[in-house]
Image 1 (tube, rainbow, N blue to C red):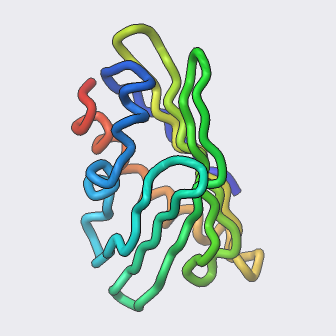
Image 2: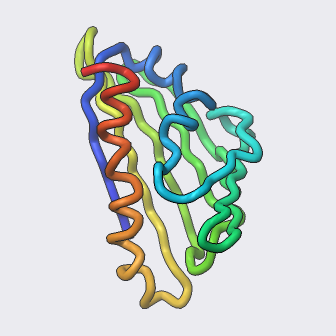
Amino acid sequence: MKIRFETKVKGGYVEIMKRFDKDLFEALKPKQGDMEILEFTGSETGDRVHLRFNSPLKMEWISDIVDHGLTESQAYFVDVGVKLPTPLSFWRHQHIVEKIDDKYSLIIDDITFKAKPFFLTPVLYPALYAAFYPRKTIYQDYFGI
């Protein structure tokens, strides 16, 4: 199943992508719940993000950055879940920053996920949508609009 958000922000796409760092990741942490960033090595191929959710249950999430790149109109990186909280069984998140013009860019969160058992996939959709929707406002506050 897919979730996709697009958010217009102020800044050139290359500079915006350079700011996809631990500080931004801290800003994107959900306000509800208790999440620790155990490891964040960056946003390039070979890097890793390791999270622990401490409430209501202890769960770990590890994603590896499997691809990144830069073209004349976009920058991107892709993380894939290697250890996911139950019932997630698959996670692929493309982080794309596209050039709109010299002053503005479009941040795209393009997420594909699956659950096990499969019938839980659509059940997870509303929760994941709600968890990622606030990123739109956070991105605009962080980068400007």
